[in-house]
Length: 296
Length: 296
Image (cartoon, rainbow over all chains, first blue to last red; front, side, top):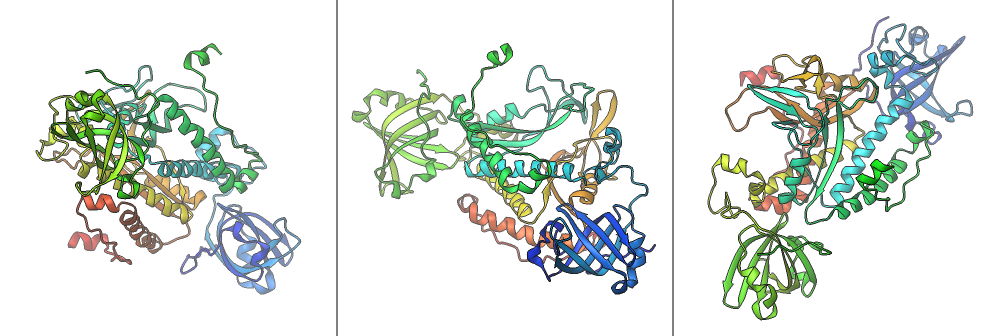
């Protein structure tokens, strides 16, 4: 079946922006064909994009030009639809889009290596080998949206509180912390390593920038057979000049509830998908010394 | 000379926040002793912090307890002062702080390896070997403030425009672009490399997240004897699904003036220090093909 070109079509809305309030509006949606039901001369498609999904209703008599193409759709085919929003009591979200024009932008591999609708669980290796498909699953996708919001909120907090963003070297000449294993890098004809912490640079920077933060990658060569290995992670660091240890704790007392509140406010739909009832923690947090932590 | 502890003293203002409007206010400033002038029973100190500087005026008779300590100060000693703001016509900024209490928090190395007041230029190697001191120079410091504002503004733009922030692997198994030289990493018992671009990951991510951006480190093992080598740089990447090349150009038409305007608005003082007259470029920008660029 022939593929269509995008041409001058552009997405007018994300799927989750189609609500009963949009009744009568002409819209252009694009995404992946998640479900299809055929009832004689009617077809119902669930079009999914990164925001959620929306039902598209297609009547053969009004869309004879592409009804055959629609009937042949496979799950996760990439599609674009033009249509008119209609309020309805027959879908969960109270809305459908009556199709007026259609494009098949690309075909998905068939059969799919994993079930995006999450009815059949896939093996962990299969999920990693098909990560892009795996990331379309609503429960997986929203984790990354929430992660993005955490980064955004943290940086907003730091900007409001006079912290300067710095980026310190990732390739370093010597270890910055005792104990952690390093990844060796061939740096031209010299021996070098990937940093396992921005610690030393960050401390030095307070002697000129006073209040700094860095959100960036760190690397730890600790061999691990678990799925939560820590070879490469994003670390959030702050450092403050003219301050005591207690002052830095107070930043965390502020920052952590700030991040939680931002996620709660800006990711309400995402939390619902995870059935997560996020509680904003109350500061001040209990301080436990390293010695006491080890004892406990 | 004995050093003082911070104890319960905390900075109440940055130096640039002391203006004639603060007349009569009690303030606590902390920073570096940049200049000192002694006139018998009077001392004038220029206290500098990351924001700028402020004159501190000290009368021996009212401050006999630490006048000797103040008289002995060396450039870049770390100090804290308490005092009262006074409007005056005798300083450039129209303001001074009359000292009431003083702490010497730390001593600078004497003689300093380079001149923070920028009257004597230092060799490039000396600057790099003493980078923290070099970064205190107003003209160097503001470059980093502006850099931070560029990152902040870009992320703000991306958040407003529905881009999701992603972070893709920095340690990769194979090259992502032809031509660029890679840094080899010993990844446990496997061969790996530092990424020279998030390109391939970023492209894949549009198939689930649609609109993505990444601001992160890339590494290029191109040997270079210049001071502008590119072994490790921060790269800003975007990628959009359901879009054409022209759509991505339009993002840059929006984004670049947005960043310029943000810097112009939020870094006005910093631009003044650089004597920079920043002009916000007008979009749309001229598109030049790769072939034409090479020809030109």
